[in-house]
Image (cartoon, rainbow, N blue to C red; front, side):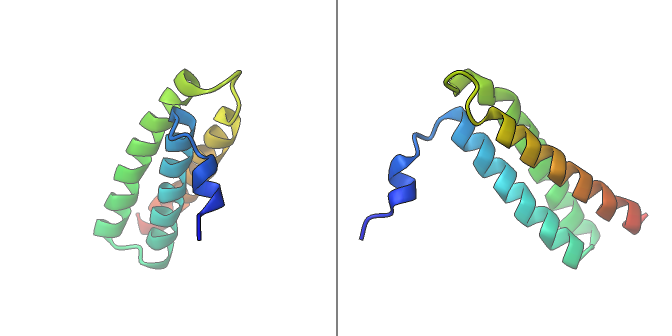
Length: 89
């Protein structure tokens, strides 16, 4: 059986930014449930990667489509990670 969603993806910079933001979401969720130094550091590294990916998203977008979503996802996860960091310190 073919995976329809993946067949629609182009692996553009927007797709990569959305994927990085989704991985950041998972990392932050993990940090929220297990707020150890190591897990928080992993989430911070994921944040750096997602920020870089989102900054490149406009390069591969068609008329900006998808960039706003990636930026919104990144902003939400930055807020969530900040809460974890604040609780840990």
